[in-house]
Length: 169
Length: 218
Image 1 (cartoon, rainbow over the protein chains, first blue to last red):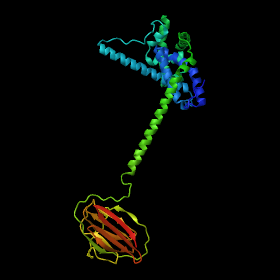
Image 2: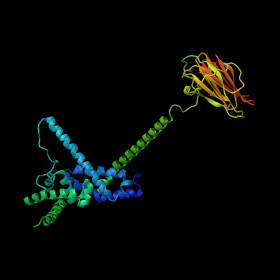
Image 3: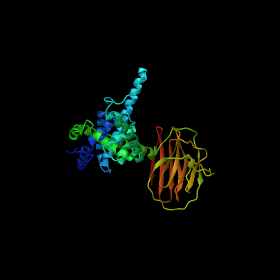
Image 4: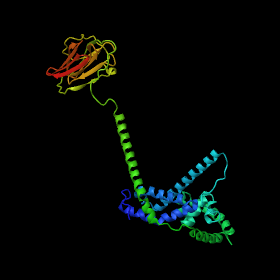
């Protein structure tokens, strides 16, 4: 069913739906794996699709509209967790006690997502986009707004850390 | 085992494990349907934002245009409050070449005192008839704020208004015209410009402190 969006145009609406069906699920899964919070990941991806929808006439002409959406979703997710971390720091200051930062809620320590959550943020996103969404290095670089070399570096470091986890397990 | 081979094996294992993560593929159709109201709202907000920005831009352009036009866009006569001393006038002879001049009455305008004719002359004083072209010039500096210029095809005059009396500051005939000062205050100033065939009269009356000009051709 088309979105019948004036901004998108009749054909663009169908394109939008198609792009959504093709990429939404994989984006949510990869970002959820990266951040450990499936709900936050889904919110970020939906927000990115909403922003794309109102600008679809322009974005649909891009070589890879999904890349733009993924990039926006990633930024939204980063903003979300930055905001969460600021809030947590403020609460700790108010409570007058230093509490070690905790990871996203609901992560079991003994599974792969927990191992991923212990990686630095850039490595986490690079690994999640590469392995969960199965993007190429170039696509990961576009989504993260990094050079391909930087993505390779983060992937290498992330894989090294996960290898240790696999060998233990 | 080299690092690359090691990573190949690791890649395969990581891909397998990530694919096995719980949560599987989502029902994207259901998600898309649930998002439709949100998408429509976002579209409306976007349109409103664009319309608002366009309105602001138009208002800014209009404001800039008004500023560019400035406060001097009309040609109405402005008679400013009286101040400064009364001005006396004298008539200076001026050479001219006779010619026929046809023209229309032009609206009076406020004079620029910096452009008033400079040298006074020994010509007869106002109130006398002169048949040769001449220029009426002030013998003292005129007040800046209450001189008004009136123009006709035959020439132009500058009238000084104190609020209770008016007087002729200067009269400048057009080429080929002579000037005759018919009245010089305190309630009426009348100057006639004649080239032998056509006479232009500029009469200014002071009525209730206001100047009432009348420019006619005879």
